[in-house]
Amino acid sequence: MIEKRYHNELKLLGKRIKFFREKNGMVQLDLELKSNINRTEISRIENGKKNIEFYTLVRLANALEVDIIDLFRK
Image (tube, rainbow, N blue to C red; front, side):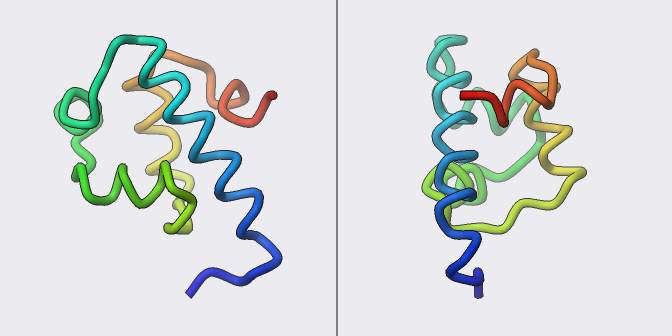
């Protein structure tokens, strides 16, 4: 279970991932194929319901063709 104190940060990170996915004209299936991360997991990440591992974050940034730091900038 995600600690409540990190819930807002995970939601913001998920929104950034979704923003870049949509900016690249991708649906979750496209991101799944490009990152090799299951669509269900991508959905949970984008909705801030999954604590994301660093390796997963790197794979998503690479698939979205952004620097990992961009996922944390507003």
